Length: 212
Image 1 (tube, rainbow, N blue to C red):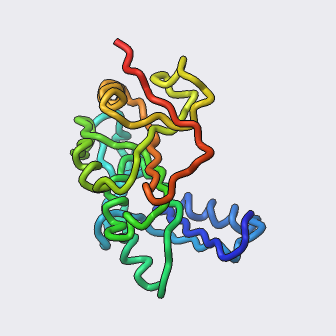
Image 2 (image 1 turned 60 degrees about the horizontal axis):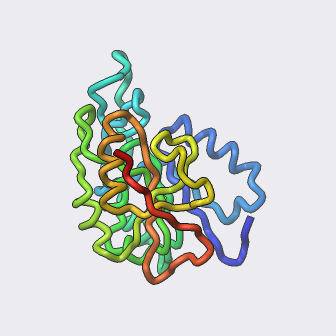
């Protein structure tokens, strides 16, 4: 509900979901500040196979629908998209695209390091998909510009029993061990990346203690 030059860019690849999005935006109070695009985002600008069973660009080898259709859907690098604007700064980037988040972050190019805050779903190497990503890939991508944290989630079984007043848990070697153990079991984690030039003072930050 904030004015003052704030603009929102929304990207939805699935045509069915995009139609619902437009219906919701028609009821939005400040819809003149919102741009909605019926395209996907990734690390290249072209078309890709979109799998209806996973509702994403990620192919799953397990728990798939036998007769699930595959669609060709346009995707674009975000730096290519924003290149058409004379000057724009992405203050907050939020991504949750069913396993394809890392590649969307890659598609930000040099703009990534200029972001103030980023929230994304962590995706690691998964034998049930065609994803092959490690923590080292994330380290190379963020290149020391951001501090990384696990977002508090009271529904996550691996975060239950911890201090609920903590907003963010530091992503350190202890928490990485926990995530590596949890990920094959289908437990997801949302990560918040905070640019070191733009710290948030009012957040409560804690450390995840690895339980044996």
